Image 1: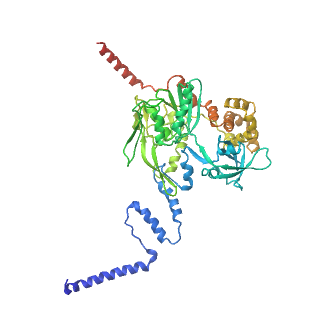
Image 2: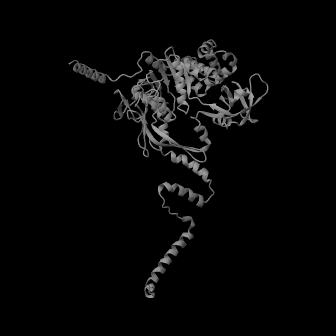
Length: 560
């Protein structure tokens, strides 16, 4: 370019440089008004904000702590079942569905700020060194381990630990003047997911599943084999209170009850196409009559089980409307052992219904109030209180009507047993006095009570011991005002609860369940259905009429 042309642009270039200089000068002259322009995409914006805080914030910030505090709030803006789990809780949460964990092998109760051993795992680490039911843990590794700071979470973290590690327990035992010291080497403690398997009578069996963990399929096969060996002709599978577990495990279990090529469940999400899970015809229990029990606490995999049986008209569902969780989570582990459980899909029952109850993103509190709303509306006590959405009407294989939009509706509704509450009962429940008395009575009379080997014998003994009257005296000593009229109204409930607790303390959970079931209306209804041979649902009347008419026409044609 010629010098003449350069001379034309020189004033313009100089002016631009002056303007840039002024802007830069103003920027550095006002540090409290600095602006950092970010042009990244929204997904990178969070990383940029964290970096900017780290580099520019006026005070020193613990960035790890900041991120840990922020993540739960971010995830809470999604659905109610997506959750971030910090590393301090990840291990105990992650082991909920595992086949085992590593620990000392005891079941315990915390009473008056002290850990009491309820029972010891057979052939477990504690039994091997001589710890017995009724012992109290006073010290751990020579440090005092009692007081108001001791709770279930603290106790679990202390007693659990890597396999092969040792912990020294200082034990106070009845009749021993001094502490007994035991060094326990932690080992693998099996976690069973089936709490009870027994024959109710000569023909009907019963299985209670607490969750769907890694070992549940094998456990169920073994339980069914045990019942069939005892000539079981029909089975009650109790999923009440079962909050779910692994999708693949429940699918394998349902497969055992369905004929070939029946849809069990299908899933679908924004990033994943529809995935169908069908039965393969290899199931060993395809023809045995089955009844499934559910309630408002039956969720997720429990609902998949119940809905698959219901939609395929394979068995009868009895109880109350289930929880209503129809979302599938994927677990993502981070390098620091923290976890993210992120909802990646919805699952649908064989008829095509979603049973996920409505929710508003970011409003977990309202979602968690659902059970309270059900109680307020009277749903637990009357089927008519449940409002069904006709736009979410579906049909089972045989044409029966079922509904989506919030839980599985049972085929037979059984209301929750009514408990006539009063001020006396409310007081003893609020202060957990029934539980306290049950444990203290067990602890004082453990040697005598341990002579009984089943719940029927133990119940007969307890009926002669004036347990209820002793409890009332115990409540008196705790300052509960005696109201004889209210006490008598609450007697049946309190006495049953006392007996069930004592039976659990001495004989374990299966005996406890047997005792509870004897007076349980939902269980009794299931037993009635099986004994009458009515577990296989019948098609609706109009479909039967159509089938009969078709059969008649078909037979006439053949005869011609």
